[in-house]
Length: 352
Image (cartoon, rainbow, N blue to C red; front, side):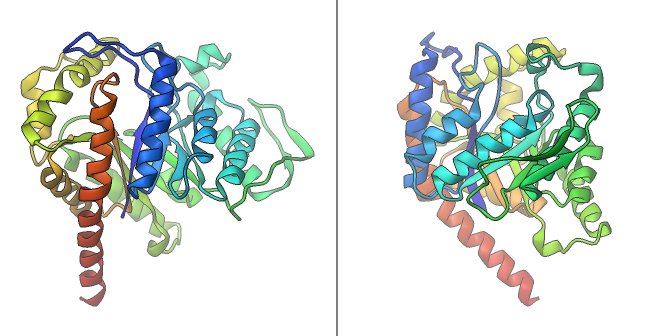
């Protein structure tokens, strides 16, 4: 199983201490975090796109291009590219450029996005949200398949025999489809033969198992080889030397962030009880010491059979040293034992 990180360049204030961080410092810290993740053997880093004051990354491709020149092996993905408000030609060119810079480590994770600020910002209509996404995804896949592109669009101007460069370093630039809770999107990924990423940000993680089951069933119904299926689970977490201290460290800023988003979306306010419940063995949060986080990762794998796990380390953005320590613990202590146990499980299943 691949183990990695995702990040939005969070830049909100520390809810416990009031400490703040400017966006330039946050971006430079983020690049250092990616370098450390590469050095300790993590497999993937994915950067999301947001257009809000609380997040420093609105242009993931720019940050990933910088990371490409400072890393050796880690895969570099968006997480997600909000495709409905982007131009697929530019997205493809940007990530083909990252792929060339990194010698074949770029990926695109396309999604409809969890926020909608980018749509009015770039002049897109929210009432055509799904139609626009489907059309632009079709164009993105066409760009991957064809060097000289002919394509007919409704919401985006058509292309008549135009070449698109650069081409990626890889023979086929990986494109993942990221979903929240929409079954139609899950089936679409299977129909197109795309890897799927499921984001889990609340509740008991096993509640999302029907989505993974639907993906597997649809994958086989479309005649695809189960051995080719790739599934990522993306969730919040943090690793510290002491589990209780790690949970205490993460709680204030993580909960303040979730409550801010919740006020915008009409969610009930969250407190310490809800947070502690989600840190329990059946809860979605992967927060604790290396033993606890490894056990939770393996519990996720037992439910989903996922081939990838991406964790958003959710300490206060101003506490850079705690984040670097967490990355080192994840890469040096947690990931090796999880990979070994998953390999053992897969070998046992193959011989059964």
